[in-house]
Image 1 (cartoon, rainbow, N blue to C red):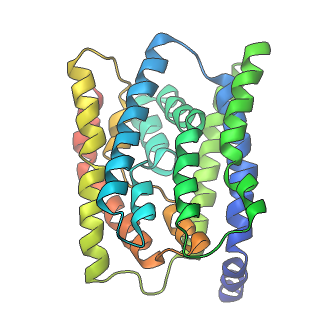
Image 2 (cartoon, one colour):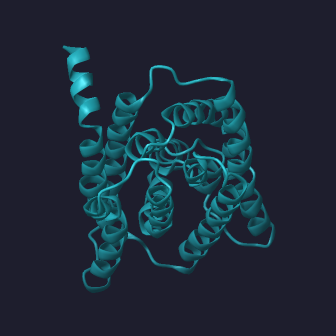
Image 3 (cartoon, one colour):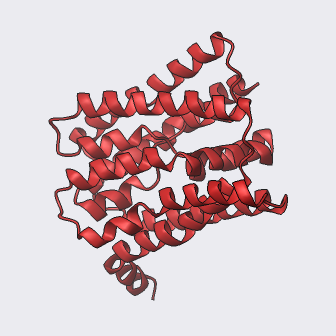
Amino acid sequence: MGLSARRWLQRHITLLFRLQLAGGIGVLSVLAGWSFDLNVRNVGAIGVLLAAQLLSVSVAARLFRRRTDGPLISFWMYGNPTFWTAPVAAAALGAEAAVFVIAYDMLTQARIALGVRYLRRRAPKSQARGTALADYAPTYGALGGLLLGLVLPAPDSVDTVVAALGIVMAAFGAMLVGVAWPKRWIGTPQVAITLRGLALHWTVVAGVLAAATAAGVEMPGAVWILALGPIPTSVVSFARLYGYSPRTAATGLALSVAGAIALLPISLTLTS
């Protein structure tokens, strides 16, 4: 029963992944945009974090431009807001910290749209033009939520829904990772390129955040959990979807989770 169910899920991984993007994460984007508290502190923190991540992605795209999996490794630089950062931040810092992380992820979906565009453009597997609507749905949802918030203030209960739905989407994403995970996923070439990618992932964003903090910019503690956390859970599914190496994606995710656990005491110290 279990094996047959997994085979069915593997045959439909593309559909399931795009349903998660267009349905679950699209709805989460609308709610996050609707409930986001626009103030100087939050906007400033989002601006610094966004600039740091875009710089990291640009450096990765440059360094790995000659590799087939270069766009996939560049996408690693966005970190893991929902599966890792939000639950850890909620446990260590409270629900408000988790909502900030989810709101950042949803409201800056344009950065993800740039990463997805790069993945689609360089994809070894050709993509049907009509699938772009599902792939970019979270970006459209976040913009729609912000516009809704301008005319209709969100009730306080939306924050709770955002936090809960974020955890549900993280769990669904974890299930998709299990479906997309390759049988043979680790080898010397994969470890070598993963270590290079993770070194970049854990230094550029953290360096920019440290410089901003030293300059007097007030940053929420959760940003350090994101900066020193693992790579996106979705990279394994993206690898299957677009034809990149699932082995590289799986190796990167596994080693990044191990590294993030080792770095967790440091990131929690920096949050205080």
